[in-house]
Image (cartoon, rainbow, N blue to C red; front, side, top):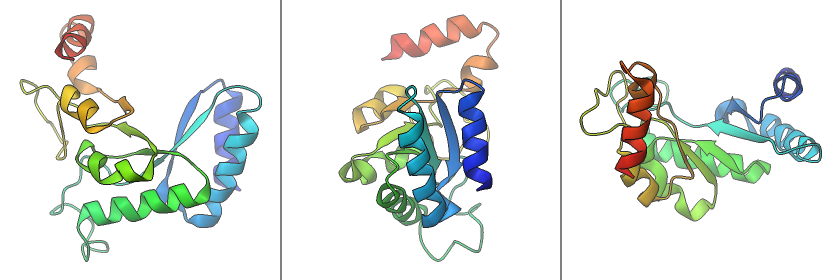
Length: 161
């Protein structure tokens, strides 16, 4: 109920997209899928379920989860999201091809040009490669917002496509 209330408040505040964690469990995800359908009767709204952060790699992955490789966790979470009725996830670009058969909307952070610092991101990919792999939407954060000229950096990303 806390997640449903938070998502509803996000919608009421004017958001068109929000994120939740895919590890919330099947009951919560099903309730969120119902809410997404309800809210889409009012206006377009998408709930994205976050799988495994792009700032994690197998070495930094929590020891609780290390019994399986990250891609296996991502696939299991994506299947749980799909089974709940939600259709959108956030995943590393490294899992795009693995998730293609699930037919989900794939928002992919960790997008960097070859000349960009990866910073704390561990599972990154270039924008053209991510789109070619099947990403539905790219997230480019620090390479643009931390640039001396964010506008020029954004234009550089667009021209790289």
